[in-house]
Length: 484
Image 1: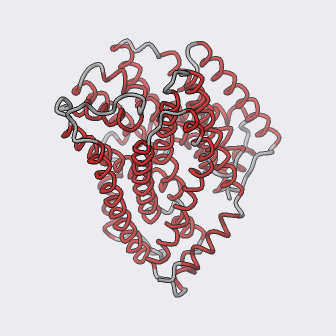
Image 2: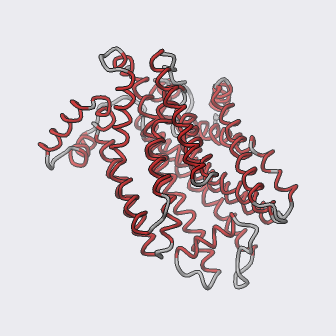
Image 3: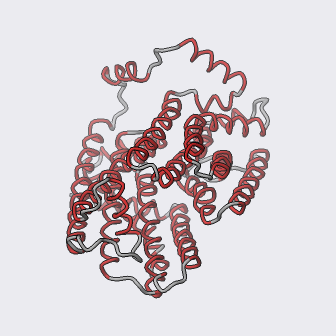
């Protein structure tokens, strides 16, 4: 195979992109913040093992979120910019193009981990870490890296628009993550006689890999060698899934690299599944009302994809809460924050993608020369984002009230403030992934280390600063217009 030219070309292109250096610095800073918090919060003899577990958990979550987002635009960007046809016209085969793209983004993802490696070595000096812990966490995160890369490659070959590619990549990654953790929990649950419920098996898995300070498995288990052997098999299985995803991506690339009109089957699927058929008069009335009262917010909700995501999140929240209640009622207290975090991450994604889309297609310049002022544009877009996620958030609030979770106020602040920070970074930064990560870090990650009034004060300060900077940058027209 002639994969080397693709790798050399992509290495040179990625080396000239400043965003890669910023991402490495961002990963190192995040690892340092996590380590500092846990060392400060727990200074007993086993703080090294607990700090190592917290960093492992952070890397595990970052892999599933970041790697699919980074790899989701590798093929779709070539197709969107018109350079994919040039690659096809060379002697390179579609499989070689996909392999080269996959290798580059695997290296790119590994550099983010390597940049945080000096921070990861600090818990070793604190003590309490065994070679088994290191091997297990390495195999665990390596499987996650391979599976998330497969999700990004497959999504990039299926979508041309980068926002849809990222959304599809995260959906694929979520499904693979659920399957991976479920398979591991079934294996661990089979070795633990008391772990018969799915929730109990998941707790055992969390203790096994992310709480090395405690005894991970009872005496009835088959022992650490079986867990390690299973993780080796998991890495091999993840490699097989990556190979299958690469083959499917190459086949998709071979059959769809030309700009052909939609096929009859594609038009039939759009007409059957995506064309409105029920309450058409009510839908037209709502669209006219939104366009009249809030034309900027109408841009956020007029498409069928925006309407689908609005009610899809309601379905996800209802399904998640129902599953937690079916397993055990007390698990609602543990699973509710994860559902809320997912919703806020989606809000950050939507806020960052909104003005990015207008900057690309030129609609932002048209908005700025209309009679709408800067405040109307900003608050109109915020109202559109709030309205898009309001039904799902109300379901979460109702669940919090019924189960007396006690974090309603801070969750409401997150719902109101996350889109403001996301809009600022959408206007200020050129790269979507960096803007999304910074929004999530400043509104969700860093405030999670504070509690009560301190968290609310930090959120209010960050949001106020972002709102002021957003207004003046839009007023002075000093924002970045081109995405690189």
